[in-house]
Length: 181
Image (cartoon, rainbow, N blue to C red; front, top):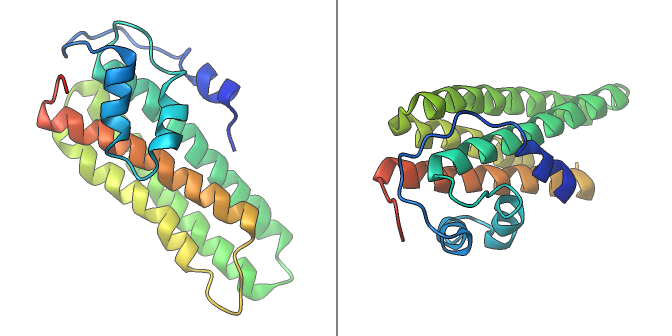
């Protein structure tokens, strides 16, 4: 899992600021976004270190997309480590292999979405982010009894889902043109 320092460091990657949305104060903008997520407390924790005063929703979205993509890719790497470690357990190995394919789809969807965000073509963002958001849930559902999903891996999956939920809320807000509360 990414710590606060790693999430905050993701905000160092910036693009040319595009001031195309009315600015809100940090608490108002972040609270408004986070109220639309699956886990508002996680959202606050993710967005607070990324927000820079005076930046637009699009700017915040770019920082959040970078951070979330990094987390999803970290989870993908963890899946492959577990896949290698479970080579002698064909059932668990097959589940991790399936999860790897699901996370590949999530990464691809997020990469496409980042391109649309950068170009300002916001209409395609929600569908792509929703696709990414669904992949951790599908991975979770691959663990059927008697195979139990390890608790640490379930937490990682939940964090990926929560993180994607944050950028879905930002994407929906960009599409709707909500510039203020």
